[in-house]
Amino acid sequence: MNRLLQQLESEHLKPSVPDFGIGDTVDVHYLIKEGDKERVQLFSGIVISFQGAGPRRSATVRRLVAGEGVERTFPLHSPRVADIQVKERGLVRRAKLFYLRGREGKATRLDPNMGAKQFPRSTKASKAGKAK
Amino acid sequence: MTGTRTLGLLGKKLGMTQIFHTDGNCIPVTVIQAGPCKVLAVKMATAAEHPEGHNKATVNLGKKRGKVARPKAADGYYAIQLGFDARPARTISQAELGNYKKAGLDHGMRFVREFRLDTKPTQKPGDDVTVAALDGVKFVDVTGVTKGRGWAGTIKRYGFSRQPTSHGNSLNHRTGGGLGRQHSISSGVPKGKRMAGHYGVEQVTMQRLEVVKVDGDRNLIYVRGAVPGHVNGYLTLKKTVKNERKVEFKPGLIVRAAAQKAAAKGGKK
Image 1: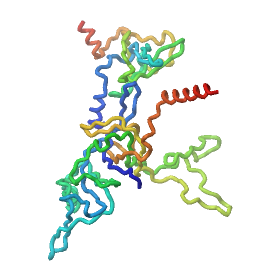
Image 2: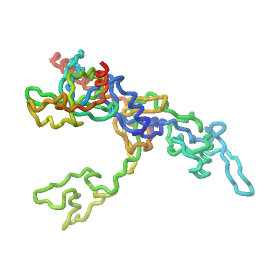
Image 3: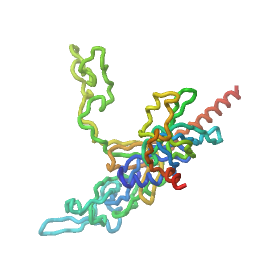
Image 4: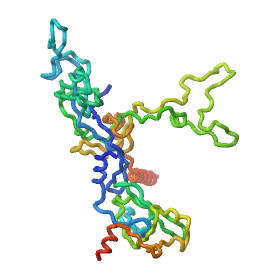
């Protein structure tokens, strides 16, 4: 990509995007308009995919509603995505968790510890957690 | 031929990205490096209109008589020749370099285009033209050369339909189909029958693209949607020839207006 364009894209980023990864269970605070009022809608589920880079970056969140799988893709730098809160970390070995689509019930759980195996994930949050 | 022809800009396609509107809508944009352009020449309808300092032409009359300065002749029309993107002097001929020297340059330009105008131009050779030239313009027409597709079939080139993959069809899935008629008084292949052939690398103008954002400091223009050609391809930008007054489509507003009309009608009845 053109260097200047890359720089322009960096100017359109949000100052900060919450730190979360694939497999994490998150609450997405999404601003929706109802008439003249704006209110926050919560969408909580497992992050199964990231796409794009820079201001085009988006995350797909999957949850089960009444036994039916629902997936929503949020552009992370959209002004309508007010906040994303991590409820639970999930350690996974894949970049895309599309295999969850074929699963139901207990099979959709993600092991927070990957059994006994621990492997480091260098995220800002995990570093902050260690510091504490 | 009406009074609509204005000075445009030359530019370069930097690429596409998306930016967010304050209301949260995501807008696909093409970023264009539009200028700074240099005025290389100014064409005047009558000879007297050439500005001072640019109204003489040097003519070489051969070895004996040498170079003679003469008054510049009329061009018969108004236009401005713009140049964009510097090009080293060593890559162009002396004859061409002479044209650039008239604009006070010691190098050439990679992309040179002329803009026809309806009124007498105020610019002089050597002036800079920046994105300010498109101040207040909401919609532009962008001209560029499309990406080359090489030898392309009728599906890609003309949007023909594909034929069935099965039901007895064999070896005729992406072919163009019948060409004409036989055994008839009007037999033969019609003139202009669309067939496979070279596609792309042609001049295309995208009309009425919305100007989303203008960055005056860096001479950048953000245009909604795609423009012809590859990244780093040269483009010509002009104020649109289409109706600029037509406001952007706003579903909310239009629905409300329609509802009010319906209410007014209902009230009368």
